[in-house]
Length: 372
Image (tube, rainbow, N blue to C red; front, side, top):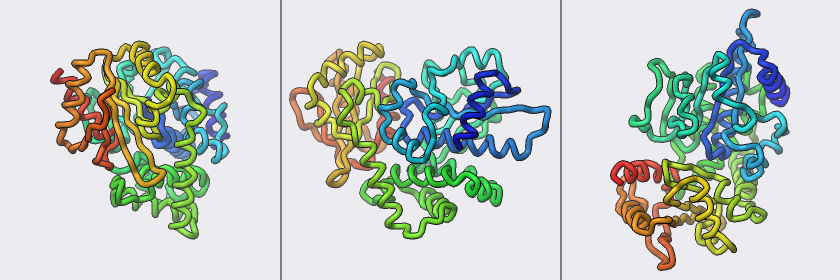
């Protein structure tokens, strides 16, 4: 894969292409998003090279929607790619290129993976989107794409499941690709295992399609002891994701972040309670709100060390609005988040619905913004 990444990066820098195809994950740049982007771009490039003619010189670039200096904050992404032998120097980060200049000076197509709603700063890319692969519930209010956009939007545990399915649709061609690029099959499988927590009934994220993709990929990587192999992968990736001891509160807030208008929504691989006990944690939240021109923060925590636990805190520079959002989330019913208040010092809750991740919070936050 390094050869492909290095070659396309060189072509992009020298403008040695006729069409630029950018495969882009979401702004949280978690492992699902990064791997979906890298593998799908690799497959599209490989397919193109098998069928291209001499007069065309398209390139397929995976772009990670995070600044290069923040890549180290994505501990499980950095760990997983390094383990697969993928060099950081061959990756393209959002601050490596001027996207607005590229789309105005080049023939450009954009493929979105692991999201279907562009952030405000990237909405200028809307006319260039020609394909979407996502596992979030469809938000029709934000659908502003041209007719004919190819979309594969299905609610499953991992976007890598859908990338595997999209490639699998090509039959024997897919088998050949995964045999030539075994790292792609292996890393897709890694993410599906992590995102479903090895098909945990407690987490309840896995669907039959996730299982189908995992079994298919296990055939490609020839995993001998399936149960042991799955558990070994999960343990390794969970350790990498939760290894945040060297990160400051400010860095933790940027590790896995979504921003929805003026709502700052970081997700932690530790409980929010643990984060808030760190020195200068509240100061870091308030600083982040000011820096990002946000009014509200919804902090989401998760811990898997002794069974799954989730918690959430709402912090606001406007206490009245914070109280209003906290009450709104407590009353939300699609699905119920089951928030149990546990603190008087801030709006902190234990989350009893363990299956609800940030994906389930985003529709609630969208609704809150519409009504408030």
